[in-house]
Length: 172
Image (cartoon, rainbow, N blue to C red; front, side):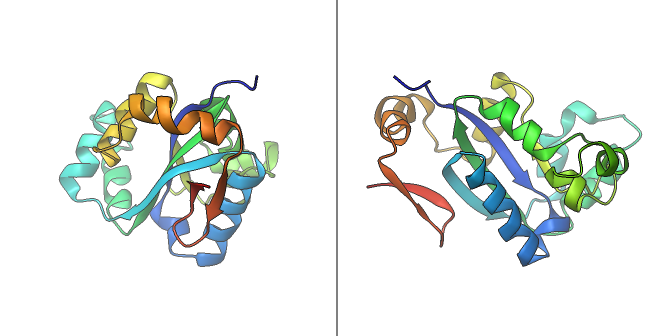
């Protein structure tokens, strides 16, 4: 039996969403890495929503710059599934500091497309608890228990196809 799929939240930040060919390349990397895309949406966050989402960084020197950046344009948000979802997405993204990443991990998303530590293309959950909290923030109607019982086994068995128009896997 294959390993049970776990979830993580992936965000494509405004710097890359503005460049369609970069979005396509990142999506290609997501699929090539073996992720299933459970849900996707595009959203423009308000100042208050960004403040709430990044509240753990309140008071840090970069917080206001991050808030301003994240509300500067649309973002793409994805629930990704994989047996090692959190670790694999963080590996695929690469380290946060884009300048260092360009030399130490140039094959990663941030190594390829990151501009600065703030404009670093992507966000990913750092733990299962964070993933579930962040998924609930962006997908309040998502029911983890229902997904685990009904959809996870079908995805794990490969009984799905990618719908490129919505960038989500659909059950066959």
